[in-house]
Length: 66
Picture 1 (cartoon, rainbow, N blue to C red):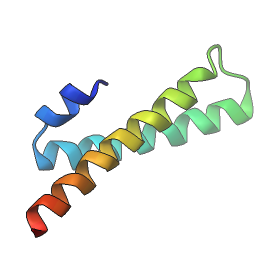
Picture 2: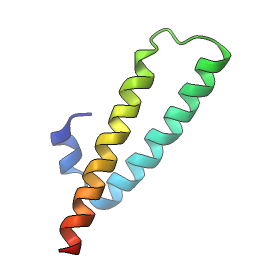
Picture 3: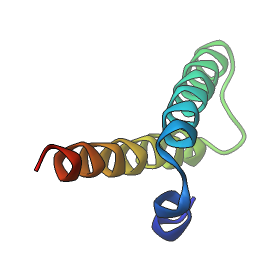
Picture 4: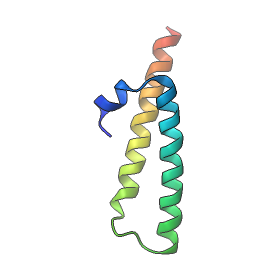
């Protein structure tokens, strides 16, 4: 997910997307623990996506506070 796509999301969509990505990461970690993933870079990509979403959420919270 690109930063431009993240900026277009509403606050509610952003929160839902964060929850979905965290659930997906948990499933990927569990799957990887049981048997190796075909592409282990998916874990890394998922973590980066979550970080981007959380960064945008924090940026919006700070902007609303000021």
